[in-house]
Length: 227
Ligand code: DX5
Ligand code: ZN
Image (cartoon, rainbow, N blue to C red; front, top):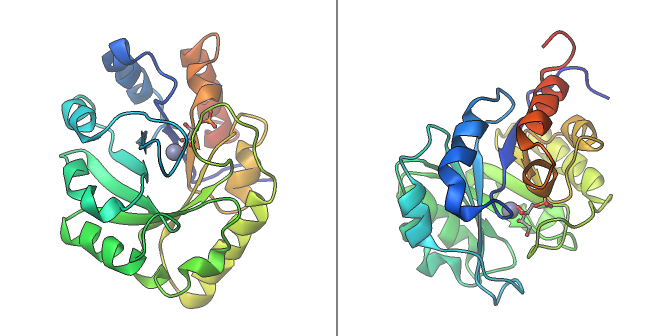
């Protein structure tokens, strides 16, 4: 277990009140544990749910100082990535399972001037990224099957994070490790200990009775003793 961690929260707004996102963003900014805003894009084809698209992301840009961590759960992402480049966009993450030409799509994202990431569904092994790891800025380990907030954490994700952290160390690479799905205050230190530096959490924050108090508790956990 870690006492201090470099891990930052990337709160997912999937279960937020979309009519009051401005207030939600302001709340995020008050908390030192929050490093990013995670935006979940779903197309109703790659995953069995539809969320929002590039028009909404563009309208959110400039409304927060926090960088956007954009998670595309869509088929054939290379057709759409350009639309998600905004002044806030730090990462655009595509699924390894979602397109035929992952290497090309990752290079396309980088050519747009933003960082690229690849996400792995729970059943996809880390080796799926072996030949693109050296151009990747973020690897996102899905700890639920993508599509919905509020699902239970899948424990094998810890092993996958550790394997990826080892691959990174052995090859002298510096991509960020991220984890998404079923994260709460009971397991966040476990995923941080396994190597996660960007920790996505949706319902545990925004469905809490008092989201601001929940984030304060995360601040204390991630800041470690004395924070
Ligand atoms: C799941 C999404 C997640 C989700 C996280 O498909 O990618 O980002 O919103 O929500 P929780 O934390 O509720 O699992
Ligand atoms: Zn996500």
